[in-house]
Amino acid sequence: MLSTIMEDYLKAIYYLQNETDDRVRTSALAEYLDVEQPTVTSMMKKLSERGFVHYEPYQGVELTDTGIPVALEIIRHHRLLERYLTDHLEYDWAEVHDEADRLEHHISSQFADRIAEQLGDPAIDPHGDPIPTADLDVSEAKPGDTLADHQMGESVRIERVPDKDPDLLRYLSEHGIHPGIVVTIVETTSFGMVTLDPGSGDDLVALPEEVAHSISTQSLAKSTN
Ligand SMILES: [Zn+2]
Image (tube, rainbow, N blue to C red; front, side):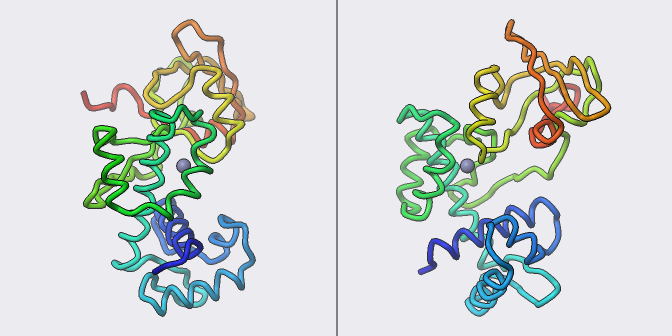
């Protein structure tokens, strides 16, 4: 049995590995998990002894073929729970991430499968993140375009929004912004501010650079039917 903390490390390594497409530096892991580097180092030794990660001092860390499915199983739990909490328990999408972070470690894969079945095997969670299948297949798109990468006048589909900041999520939903909708870029500024028309008669929304960068988009021309 892995501890909750070990599972959180494996999940974090999976995310960071995916972002950079490279071995994950222990400093990046320490920052991501908000812990001290020596704590990360000793955890990497433990996880490496148990075969979940390849770890070499100063060379970073990556998940082994044993570690990947463990991370994906937890991510499947997390994203299914988020979907279930919003769709069936009337949670706001701003609240589900923390709740799912707690619950994800304590449900069995059978329980996750039942949730998936109940929900009709959803492909994405409320924030647009892909849910790994029961066979732990997932097409985790490589970081692509974000709201910060488009020209004025372009219309783009919102694909994924970051799931960790409840205030941001509340702000976005108040302005009608969620995965799947098409928005038009009304203005971009040299200091990175992006103003959007969310369509459907809602008011224009101005987003600071950091936020615009964190929201993935798909150009309409590129979208496949
Ligand atoms: Zn989440």
